[in-house]
Image (cartoon, rainbow, N blue to C red; front, side, top):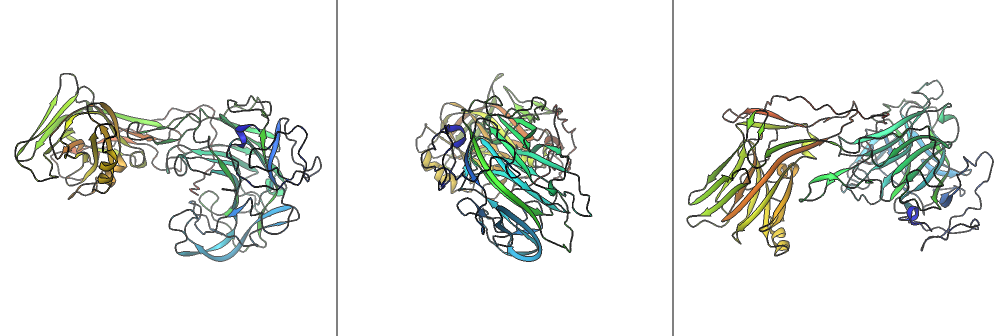
Length: 604
């Protein structure tokens, strides 16, 4: 069996039908689904599957009662989906059941009490809260998970004020971190579809990808497709074809959107040697995903639901089918024999990378930012000497010497890089989630018992601190890391001796970690951008110091923290009152051919 689509498919199925002639053999541990019921024509057949696709799993919802537990699990919570939704999700038969060959997911107007936290939250279930609506959210996580292929769902969506049905996919393993760093694929969503005496927001559906920076800066990039009929009035087949470098959306076999890997991205922490960056050209949609089916009630996107319902509202699902392509598509992007491509559909791509604001503080000498000249400085504790020297058009050389006995752990002093005005790291999440200070460092020598810290300071004692652990490659690193992890800094960076190394430090780590007697850093008034402190004799060189942050180049109007930038604050001899002078916000370059995506915050 071709490895591209079946890789990661975890499912135990009981075969009871004959395999189609010429079909590839199932992968080890995978049994064939029952395909004997699949219709070849008629009203329930759905669109014809293009040549080359092979069915690898399906649920035809033939057996009345509860959804098949081999395939489906329920979420049980009143969390609200991260979108201020108004329903409680339950596993009760009144909210989800199979009858007459279809799955029914039923939203009901009724008061219900349930867990306030989402199922995977470490605090789950936590306290109970009460809401006025119930519904169901089903998922195939750890039951049917797959990577690449065609997923096809034939369903009738509910209409009415506040109704938000969704057929969508989330990562199973969260390889790149939490939502949305590991991605989300919305096969179809609809909000406020027309219903009796309610015109709604039109007969539109949305197909969307979520990726990029962390909330609240993430990218939701998609397309709004206008249907000729109301999706709430009958069944339609909603599909995606997912390849390594391309995802395509369909309704009733009509291709209406294509996105490619050069347009999507994630931006994640890649370690102290690299800092933040794009994981790889195909990330985050190069891992296993699973399917979710749910009907949300109310929330930030559709707005509040109506009251005094005359009947329940439900999404009815005729079938769910998963196919793989007979041809290996690992290198494919719309060119495989089984791909269904309308050449008239233009690729709807994002820019493929976030915007980066980069500020150089030191490069072969102190730099000037917004007219403020950066300068190096040194402070020596009594009984010690700290020297700070800018080599001729070269690195910043620092030496710590002990001239008299010192108590163990007391710093000999520190060197700093600062200007005559403070800086404001403006833009919120662009700094607090994706900001960093980077530099190159060479630790030429250091006393075996010395501890060295990288710090950033606002008005003292507002200081952030991260430990640098110096040593020969691999020697005592584990022991020193354990020691650092139990120290007041709470974070550590390992740098081998006598080698130039690039080091990145998260602004968030500096905000969270501090030394004895220090209080949290205030990024609205940074007085010293970089401090190096040592508790013992050491000789160090530093170069290429820079601050940078990241922002979404295509923010939606409703998103916050749209930009990040460095702004000038007060002169250093003034009293601390962080009221920085705003600088012009960056203007992102427009992306060609972009369609607005759907609002969806589901940090599910």
